[in-house]
Image 1 (cartoon, rainbow, N blue to C red):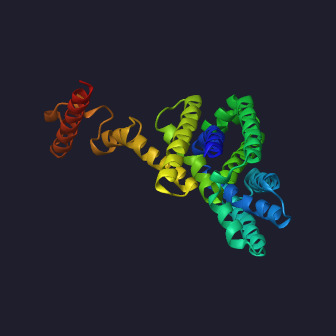
Image 2: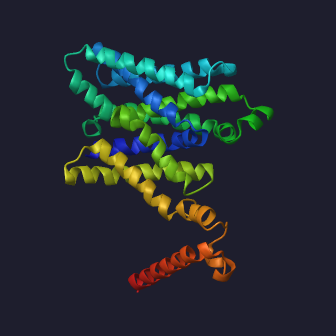
Image 3: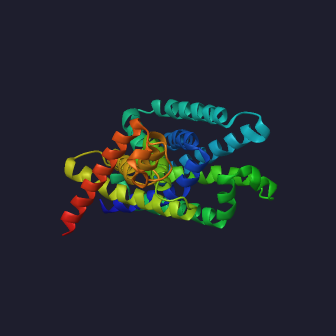
Length: 311
């Protein structure tokens, strides 16, 4: 459990730093594809009888090859990005399953690769994952201004002299390395969730890039702690418990954050950009008065409950 907790913190930091760029650039499908294509590299390591380090190395090579392959196929608009990702995804994943199916321990090995084995994390795993996380952090913070620029507006970045193509290839490689960190501990299926879910929650909390990265890492760490305790006390699988906790955290943040459901209700349901409390009922249309009155009543009841508990 102690090693699992440390491993979860390492995964959360790496995924939080990179996941924000994945969400901002709309590269969630790439993260999913890279996570699955790592199965081919891990399968080669298994066939060769490799241990944890060799499996991680094989997964990392497959992930980087996928990122470079996507970049190569999409240079100068030869193929759409989602098409290139789909090609690499299908090819590498099929190769991984094919190689593993040749092994006698097919079900055991495939299961551990698909859903991870965070409770079985060794000190060797932690060292390897920490080194990869350090590489990811150094790369992100070394090129943070350029990565921020291309994340928000790659066209303006190109006009401003930023080597957009080179930075995009570098970002794909960084995403691949961060996915390797998550892959070894939570598996192929759950790696993308750890990359995207905390980052999506962070976007609902702040609109500053550095704050998003910090909040994404914090959401991942809290999800790791709560998920591990839930898995221990309720006898559940650790990896899925952590990911489900992250998803539930995202739901709570979505309902409570001013950038989440509240703003959507104001703009889409009430038809106004400001708070419904700022507008007199008489100034609203007839169909708006009842939901606005209910909204205000719920807020008053909530305020009374908070005052009562605090007193």
